[in-house]
Amino acid sequence: MNKLEIDLYDALEKVFMEFSKREDFDEGHYCSALTHHCIELNYDLAENPINAARYILTCWAAEMEILNDKAAQKHLARSKSLH
Image 1: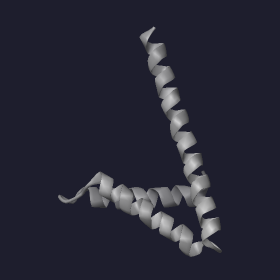
Image 2: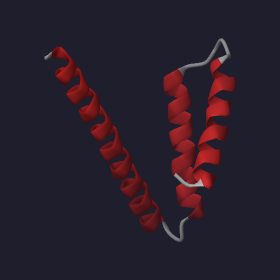
Image 3: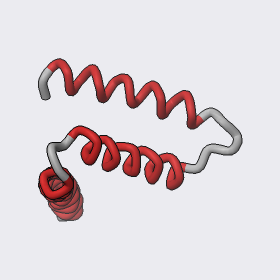
């Protein structure tokens, strides 16, 4: 991660922590609203809707691969600890 990504992640973490203290906070609604906003930003900042869709799908696929790899590593670590 570069410095910009780290700073952005830290800022988003602070926003999450602030909102999570609210009594009406719902994790699903929060994530859904954040995802909607990010998709909207991609469309607003892209040259055209096709490029925006391509970028969104590329990012989604990359993030899903990362999550899948993390899950596989956790599963492997768990199975090794059982032996």
